[in-house]
Length: 90
Image (cartoon, rainbow, N blue to C red; front, side):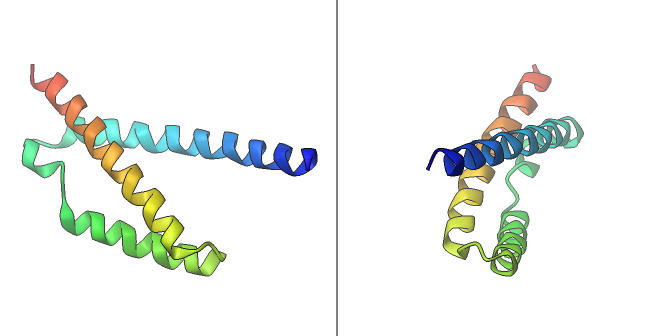
């Protein structure tokens, strides 16, 4: 069990690094967007969910888990982007 947990911890650290990279792109997007209403893009949200679902299915990850994780990730990302946009607007 200890070895299994060690492997999970290793994967978690890799996921954190990837999410950090993703966050930097979100912060950059907030700099680029000219209008606040551009931040929440329902079509883009659905596109991401579709792509993630397909990738999850291909990788053997339960689609329901992937969708829940990405919905939460995207909501957090939208909130971050709003904060960055508002800070820039001040």
